[in-house]
Image 1: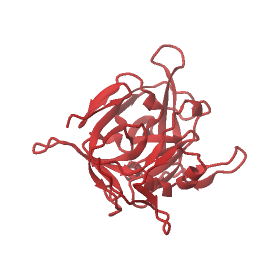
Image 2: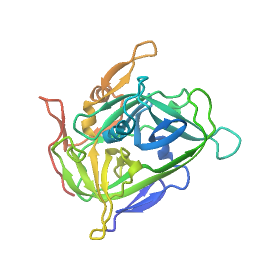
Image 3: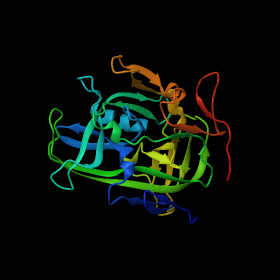
Image 4: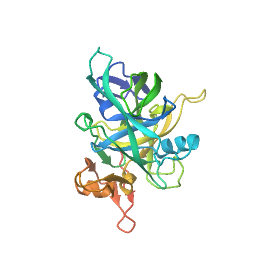
Length: 302
């Protein structure tokens, strides 16, 4: 259809993807969700930072896939990490950067939507280097261009130690897929991956990009990468589903009012009301007064 987006210095046509060959500032916002088993690393998906205190959102099936493979841990930990990396060199050469696997301390999956919130333990030096995304609660328009970010590939060599500094070499492919909105789904149909409010787009979404944020042309997050079917012989178009972000209002993060207070569970809706999270909304979005659930009441067209 001839539509393209300027994305972090790249021009990407609708229905295609591009890999970043140099550091992108978006990597201070979008990070891989990984597990560290016996010193090896596996990427399960991607997540976006919505609060510098360690608040991230990803797709619920990213967590479910990890649990299906490894099960709950006996030590009470989640077994998952958000892999933080900055572009600030630590010395010894331009390839040595500051970073750390940030433990996921708490996970809150949605009951029906393909969304989950993560509360991670953030290293002391990380908060000032994290870039927080703004959430947009709305139904994207038909034909609107969207950009999906995530880590389409990752590998690691070397041993990762939890209790001391580690020297590792890892390769990751940070990818953006661009597409247009082909279908709108405002209703909650089922608890399946495509049963929640969302949109269908022709943006390519690869496995490690699951849970990655979907940005509009204004740079706001309208949803999260949920599922995708690649081109086939009879149809060269990608068919990808984006779970809209508003149902995450019903989920919680763990937070504290100050350093002396114990951790307390606070819903995203409460944090939005307190202006602790950056958000915007339009007239396609509402909250049901009876149930408190996010609803989409209007379908706009271009």
